[in-house]
Image 1 (cartoon, rainbow, N blue to C red):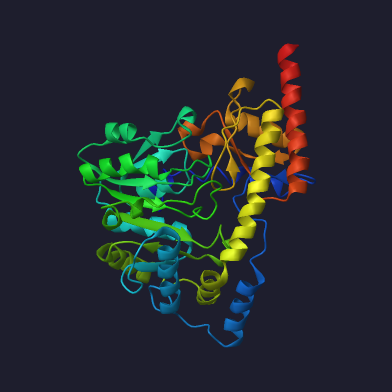
Image 2: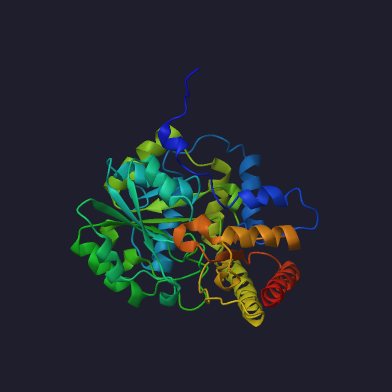
Length: 391
């Protein structure tokens, strides 16, 4: 019997994040610092609106693009927080998480062979979604000495006649790096010079710990050539509600809605009603969660440095990305031995692209109690490695 699996699908590797956590689930006393999921419950007023929508029998399809009221609230939010002005009817699409927005955008824009520039280390979906859309992914390796930021010089050096899209994954998963307005302005000039389009994944926009997040779409001449991807999972602790959105030029949103219409129909109705309340009344809860994450961030960075691990200071998202290069092993070997010997799960850096090799990702979206316990185990592990290296 012949194989019915496509070569394109077969060539795509499974996510490098999940492999370790299948083991963790069957390991007593293991602590996971790997999954990028808030440990907070969805705020009660948001859950209550979801329950109320069910009690009222609001269990039917919404319009393909999403509830009109939700799109209006998203438009108001983007204006209030980022200074962006979008028509809620024609320029906003409600998606099944931010990940669907990325997938649908690439499918709507790419012709076979079109190149997509992807700064790495980065979220695991960009490359396979590019491949599934018949595009060519071109990694841009970011450097720790540049605080994992993309420079205009690096961008310009990678552009070819086939370059069409630049992915901007900031605040960054897995590094926690951010791009300030001063960082973004020269990048935007290169984008305009070469007539590129930007997919700006801003899912961690509410989780920045210095100045407020700046969207590249807010810079002069950039809104018409940028698609902003965002959602509710990280800021509002709504991962399981599976809700995101895309905001961008009307013609692109129209084509994305067409694909969404045939593949999905609409995002979950209950989630959409809950999200209206999140947008209307959630700023205070987001601020509380952000302050808690900031406390954990400072604790984790300080503790890692105290035990001798070199750790770039992340200013966004809820991850740290310490170097494990002095220990003389690959990131997979380090993560595997840490799990086996100390029952702590982290993600090897190469899960986020080749430039992530030599690092591990640690999520601090966990309670301080669990973080303290896990980091003591990490300390035991690295001290043992150091003793062994001196024997």
